[in-house]
Length: 314
Ligand SMILES: Nc1nc2c(ncn2[C@@H]2O[C@H](COP(=O)(O)OP(=O)(O)O)[C@@H](O)[C@H]2O)c(=O)[nH]1
Ligand SMILES: [Mg+2]
Image (cartoon, rainbow, N blue to C red; front, top):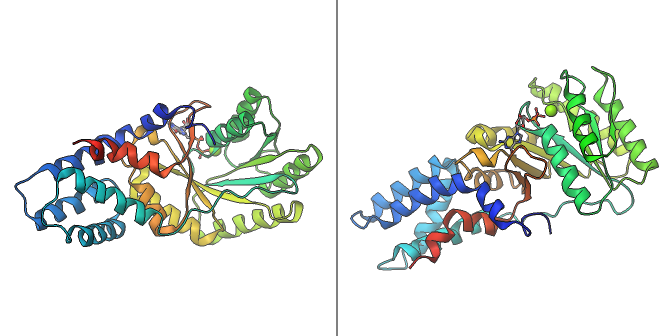
């Protein structure tokens, strides 16, 4: 399903920078024959941390990896890469990925949350384009009523996609726009309703009560809504992104992450850290500013793009 099956190269391109740093460094570490086991483990830990896998998750990977290696007297670089790949996989799937929730009895509501500038508005448009290309009837809701120009930005994308964008006046209560959006969706047989929200950096309590209210009004209009609440994270923010994921996960009912701007970062390791620390699956990644620059996240393709070449080398 999805776009990458049609365009694997483009998908791999999204991870080119991650491959460049993590893959290249791992290659260097594994092929350095002069080091002893302790040096190797230390270098491995540093490499993982530098790739934004985070201290705790890096330590877990090193421990698991070390336990596997201990069974062998000598290992070739290729074997080390294979074991590392297995370990990444084990750590990522320690908590199984849950599937995306689709509403069988009406519109599926997706609520996009995240800090300002993370890529929410543009990702709403990319998702709309993706679902539309899969034959679904999509509408957008501009519930970011706080930022000047935010509604116009989403409306512009909707015009380009030739779909409806439900809007409200500037500074209106975002929840009232969400209600209008749900009513439109029910009356017009919309399959997927994608709701953009403001990314105001405010106190935890305010943010929590605002998100709670949004969830409440959506649930009143459409049973089970929002069916998906996805945190949009800029991959370039590295460890800060992990803190955002932990904060939002604590204050609201998230069930997925969208990692944006993967085209501009060598820190793709954050994917493993986020999954390990929060249990939240990465739903999609975005790899550019164009409407088509969104892809399903596939762990095996991701792993292959980082270390595949090194694993298969003899
Ligand atoms: N290079 C690149 N830029 C992106 C990507 N996603 C979003 N952006 C840019 O990031 C900026 C902020 O995006 P926007 O959707 O307005 O963020 P919002 O404040 O969370 O709604 C815009 O200039 C986008 O074009 C991506 O995948 N790659
Ligand atoms: Mg926005």
